[in-house]
Every structure is written in structure tokens, then in C-alpha cells.
Length: 416
Image (cartoon, rainbow, N blue to C red; front, top):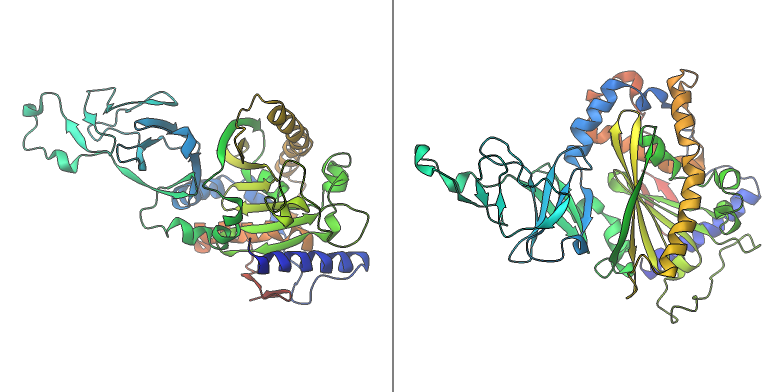
């Protein structure tokens, strides 16, 4: 986040404090949002459209380079519902392929991770190099004029942002950096290429994946759900938000200091002056990265929350921690304390989510009204429809396009 953006975020926080304390209405260019149809969380057809379009046509964070550290290191990644093989080649490049032999579809690997010099199909032992080339066919003479050069592993788009590994099953998708848009420059100061993998764990929740996404894109709930944890340290009145292209967004919530304005907090003792970004040390900075990432950035830690649909009404809530510095031992006192405290907060959020699902399934709730503080949710749903194709969605399940791209002009937010 550069100096101009930092100044803008601080100014916006102060403007939000003033507006909130004066009970001021949202900006003039913000109109009341239509309800989000409740059927989007329970409809079979809508869920099928998501499976067809979102999880096969957008960039998905799959892993971190630390998880494939050596030549031949691989991961079998299945979070999106498709078995994908991620491997570091002899040229040190990380690639992704379908975990599918091009003979009759046998698996190349069955373990979640490992290290191989060559991938051998578990069915008929066709052998493939780390870069996907087909090297060996047993009894090759039995095949008439087979061209091995055309039978290599089927590649999947694989691109890096820092040390994060992204995959996309759509060969015609826009480049990753274009998809991430402003996030690339905003996250540069946090040195994504230097962050190290700490740990990954998950919770299984009985709710639609979008219910979990919605929950982590607003702070309207802080004083009600987190009175003794998050709400004790940050002040929702000063929440500054920005909506980015491709459904992503940013939210900054200032530290609670007793003053209704942004207060620049000093660096903590573990960092020398200048090592901690002013915005991070002075409140809570969080990004939504479409389709399923929320990352609340800390001074020393960089957690990624990801929400993977396992069915229409169930979600695997995956938490991955990345860290700055040399201490990457998840068993150290620092990380044990940090993760335990983080899980307390997540538990407060997760307690409500299955109940929300049950309420929607009951038919009691036909639509979801959203406030100005919850506009990031509407922006996210608008892009869900854009990815699926509005023409493919039944009329009663569509979100009415209303926000467009919210531009930052250094003075305020302007609807286009």
C-alpha cells in the first residue's frame, strides 16, 4: 500500500467517524441496495451454476511455494472439487496438471503430498516427467502409431503471486495479476515473496459457502458477536472500504483508542521503526480476494481464510497462516498463542452460520437487506453473477447490478 493510498484510507476512516457520530446518511451517490435473494444460498440450479463457472473459471489460491520446496515435490490439491497435481519441475518452475493419465484416466498420485522423480500412472504404468511429458508406454508396440508428444499430462493454468500458487482451469482466463488488479500493488509492502508457510487447518460447517463469505466482509456484527475480543480492540465506526474490479475489496477498521478519528499507533517492540506498515499497526486491514479468500493482515502474521463448498449446504472453512521473519515453527509459543486466540474469534463467528442456513432453508427469509456498512457483500454477489453470466441465472435469483466499480479519487468514493 503506497503513501497515497495510505493517506486516502486514513482520511476515509476520519470521514466515516464523523458521519457515524453525526448519524449521517451514506454518501449521496449510494442508493438503497435491493435485497439479495435468499434462494441463492439454497437453490440447486444456482449451486450447479457456481460449480460450472466460478470454480472452473476464476483464479484459485491452491498452495504456497514452501509446500513444494524441492524438485519433484508435489501436492494433490482437491479443494475445488477437481484432483489437480501441483509439482516443482527440474527447472524449479511450479506447474499444475490434472491428476489424470492420458491413457484411460488413471491417477498419477494418490497421496496428498510427496516427492517423485517421475509420475507413473497407477493403472497401466504410463510414465510422465515432472514437466508433464509422456516418456514411457509399456508395450508401446501394441499401439498403432501413437504420438507420445501429444499425450502428455493435461496442463492447468498455474501462476504465482509472491510465493502463492494460483490455478485456473480456464485456459483463456485473464492473467493472474490482471485478475487481482489493485491488490497486487497494495500487497507489495507486505512482501508476499518473503512470507513463509506456517500451518493449515480447517473447520467443517453446515452452511452455504457464501454465508461464510458474507460473514467476514463486514464489521456491523462486531459489538454483538465479538464484544470481548475483536470489538475490544477496533472501532467499527471508522470502517473504511474500497471496492475493486473482479469482485475483490478492502476494509480497514481503526484501532479503538477512545477518540473518534484515525490514530497512528507506534510499532510494537518486536519490529524496528519502519518495519510495520502504519495501517496494519493502527487497526485491522482486511482484503476479500474473489472468489473465496478473506485475509486479515497482522503485523507479523498473514492468515488466509478460504471457504470451499463441499455441497450446496456445507463448507470447508480452511485457515492458512503465513508468517514474516525467521520463526516459522508453528509449535513455538508465539504461534501457539496467536492461533489459539484467532480460533476463539473464528469460533464466535462460526457459531451463528449453521443457524443462518437453517433459517434460509425454513423459507422464513425471502431476501437479505444490506446496509452501507455491508456493501462489500453486495459487490461480491454482483461479481458472482457476472462470472456465471446474468443471462444464465433465473430472474428471481439475480442480484440487481447497482454498485458498479467504486473508484477512489483521493477525495471520496464515486459510483460509476
